[in-house]
Image (cartoon, rainbow, N blue to C red; front, side, top):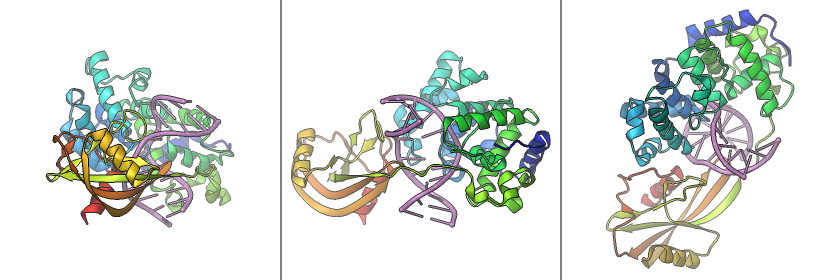
Length: 344
DNA sequence: AATTCGGGGGC
DNA sequence: GCCCCAGAATT
């Protein structure tokens, strides 16, 4: 890893660029650590423009830690619907309750206390500490790794723990030269706007410090192993309507889409087997079933291939039947896609 | 250290 | 198609 020649000037040039060129975003209009916490949780593996409408709705419905702590998990999940990585919804809910119970409702300022909140790791804790409290604590995410790997010509896979540690150490040295809040956000804003996959070096305030730029080797950094291949899972998925209402069941408490609502579906079985399993589970009597094409949905590490059947049943009660446009909790995009497919 | 968690955007 | 994204928790 090549050192940065004038670290103090580097920190200033980068931060000054940020102060003049940063985007005006809702979560930058506040210093409330609770809102910074919410924004950072939503931003984990999620692009800014994707999370913005969620941030607006969420802060409107839950303007205080107490209001979030007093809500039901289903309501929190419902507001999170479509954003993905749904355990984050459980984490922000649990963290709000932790803060009520253990910190008298006041968001903690101590770094270790922040990182002990649910769903808050080293990056998120550093981001809250530096951005909300203006403390010189590094916050190293994917943006920062990409930027710094190019600046230093980082010679090995940036996904390795050792690489992240080393960059964290470098950022920890740099951040104390500047306003920590500006510096942390500057690194990420540069990664988001300028130092992207095909970098816009002509617009970069720190290109004169950058090893990759000076060697014209931007495309060689960051060094990263290629992603693992996805596995395809085959399902038979049922759309069951009764009195104009839709049957949904609660998914298991662990695994993919944990605890969410879902369409009944059966993996690797014949239609006859799947129907029988559905009858046994629900106690319904299946009257008719009609093939309705197929829907694919791609997750980060697997693919669902769903063969869709519309099914009519005789049911003894309305339990588990819902108005499709007024669900009490969240439904995955995969199954929203199925419903949209069937409606056409 | 590797795997498991969603979903959308860019090219 | 493939990569990437203001990652964390679990195995």
